[in-house]
Image (cartoon, rainbow, N blue to C red; front, side, top):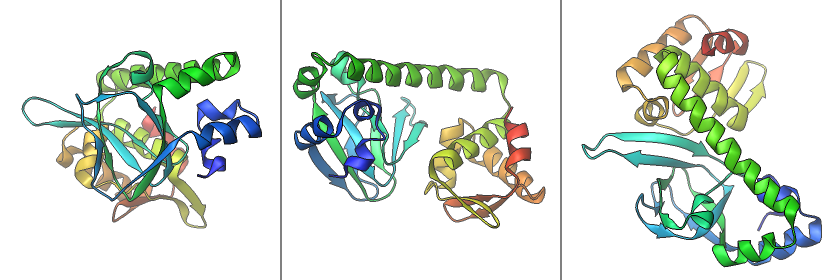
Length: 225
């Protein structure tokens, strides 16, 4: 298990090397192939997960079959922490966007480690607060931002986490289909594609299969505001 990746997760960032290694030894590792589901919305669960490799998407489905993509996560990011403090049905379905591997920690193991480690508890609370703040931002964007603005913001967020700088721009291999990108933005595929085509015609981005090259990050940033 890669301790360097685990170190990126808020739960591990406050631990010294010995404590981090001991805790990682108590974690189980799970691997999925692209398209496999880790758990479904409504399933019971009491484990926290840290992405070690690959990407996953967290989504919810409406009664009429419509889907909303809540987040895309990569190495060092964690999810499932709500079930550790509020046991109950899973609030989202987690699906592997690429081949992926995870480290997971049970409710009992986490509580044992939190006892006597206030710094670790604060780190986890910070993660929960950050998740709540992001949820508030998403709600505000849906109310106050138009679709092109939300698309620009989503691209910048993906670039921040998965981007790689090169001479011709920032290469963002997000591994999402056009439909998944639309679900992430909360708009129709046609409207999102129109926004992407407009950005491309302006020379801000270059579209590639399941990826994008951001060539003018400053102008894209202004459109996201």
